[in-house]
Amino acid sequence: MARENWERNHDPVGIWNGRGKAALIARGHSPTDRRWDGETLEKSLGAYMMIAVQNALDDAGITVDDVDGIIGSAGGQPNGAPLSDVWGPRDYFDPPYDSEDGLTHVTGQWLRQQMGFKNIKYINNHGDPIWNLIGQAAQAIADGRAETVVVTYPNGNLPGRYHQDPSNEARGGAVWPNTWGWGLSGQGFTFNQYCQKYGTNHDRMAPFVVQERKNGLLWEHSYYAQHEPGEFTEEDYLNGRMIARDLSIFDCDRPVLAAAAYVMTTAEKAKDMKQTPVYIWDHTESLFSPRSLVQTIDDTEEWTDIQAQRSYNGSGITADDIDVFAPYDGFAVFTQYYIEAWGWRGVKRGESHDFYAGDISLKGPNPLNSGGGNMGTGRMRTVFITDPLEQLQNRAGERQITGRAEIAVSHGVLPITAGTVVMSTNPG
Amino acid sequence: MARPIVPVPDPVSQPFWDACNEGKLIVQYCSICDRRQYPPEATCRDCGFDFHLSWQETSGRAKIVGYSITYDSRLVQWHPLQPFLNVIVALEEDPVINFHTNLIDDFGTNLTEEPDIPIGATCEVQFVEAAPGRMIPEWKIVK
Ligand SMILES: [Zn+2]
Image (cartoon, rainbow over the protein chains, first blue to last red):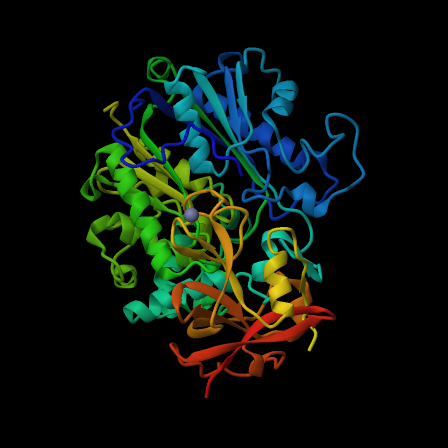
């Protein structure tokens, strides 16, 4: 994946000179389904992306004519392989569904044509994942490349098992893991090292994952809220089928079909829009490589420390300032690395499982991932933007936290490749 | 015994696999950065250049760093062996450098219980035929 020069990834990054210039205003979501059936065009990723964009525009109180930038993830499936590479080739349909664009991925060009955007002067489909897209949009606005941007995030899933690889040969980079059958085992391995290092165990994840599901059930766009609203208990978690040692099915996010869109604009134009502006104070990114083949706990702690300090350096905030904290959880066994790197609520290395055993409830003092994360919503990733936005706009409804909600930090995706966004109710 | 997935060398990795066929475990070495590099890449990860990159033979001796067990792999060819063992070993003379192994003695055994694998145990490399003419490194605990 090409890393573009808009990223803030060289230390010390210093306070972002775009601080307060870009404001996140509105969000829009499509329905959330488990999969697309490959036939029903009104439920294709393109159709869902258009629904989400229209909902975001309506939420902001603007029309397509007010938008001059589209920044998105065209892939339809973050992290490399587009769905079309996995499931294609296929028979196509009449325009506009006569190629993969609109079915399994959605470009800004496709959206411009279908939705009649006339004033677009900046399109970029190369970003990924959502934190980086928000950062990229904020930078584009701060740099004057566009004034009002729609950020698009289509996330697809098709019939069949997810990311299964039937090959009996390994090529390129896949040689080094696949020859020895190394797959998701890596997530469990690093987590096992964490447990060994700090004297804890996988069962102690249960309160966290259960709380995330509770929070997610209160978010109307969550896969679980829409399709599986039943209670999820600690016993359910502890009985989860194991995928690898120290990694159960309930640590893995459920792949879903969903699209989300966001409206971001200049601080000036934000004043005329329908929702309260939430200002982007900072965005920082990083891309690391393991010291050797396998990512170890030492790699993981070093990288997350670097990114947390980068984010603090870029935003000027401290851990005490963070009211809404949304560290990524897909896989759930990652989240403790982030909590500890940022030191949220004073949690130090090795203390997250004690923190989970305390009060992390939505209405308590430590409402971790108040949107529910991917564990509570499915593999959408967009709750990591929508929930902090709604919390800071004081319109999170039943999920609204009880304490102060002025500064939010959202962080993802993996320890090895990261983006962090700091948002505030104040221009700063 | 044959392996479910066989590595296909490319120009960067060819020397590594050729050495495996000769019973040697080699890794890249950057003389400017004074660091070993595995897996092999076209350039040194630290300095970004290839000028100072050469191949260096290792002792093949390593220590167990940790292990995982795979119950449900995304690699379909491995499914018949589930649950199977994934072990990480680190090179004795340079513990930063780590490798995958399935441990020779446990390969293909469809684990029925969690194995007793002492972290830090010394092991030595051996080469097994993943497919005709394609040797891969595996490790064996030194008793
Ligand atoms: Zn070098």
